[in-house]
Image 1: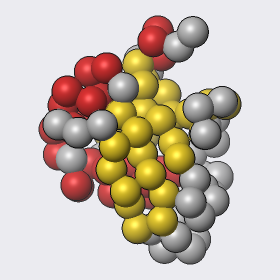
Image 2: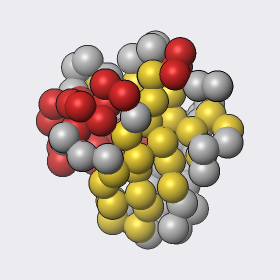
Image 3: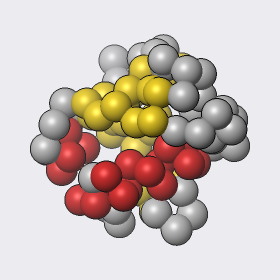
Amino acid sequence: MVLTVEFLGHARRLAGCTSRELEMGNDATYGDVLRALSRVCPSLSGEIIDPDRGTLTPAYSLLRENLRPVRDLQEQPVHGERVTLMFVEAGG
């Protein structure tokens, strides 16, 4: 499955890009997406992503299709989905 992660604010500065396309296995979870992000964008590790646990630090959130937060990191994304990594306070 392929999905796109968009970065906002500080996450964008650390990643050095506005978005990143990830190719994941069909059984991947959002936790797996975070682990993959920490590998391809190591500057996100520690400050935003805990790569060992596959979780976000409390100040950050993942949004599905810019609408709803991912609450269960064991949930599986959908092929072609766009998720946004953002600072929790940045929402409108």
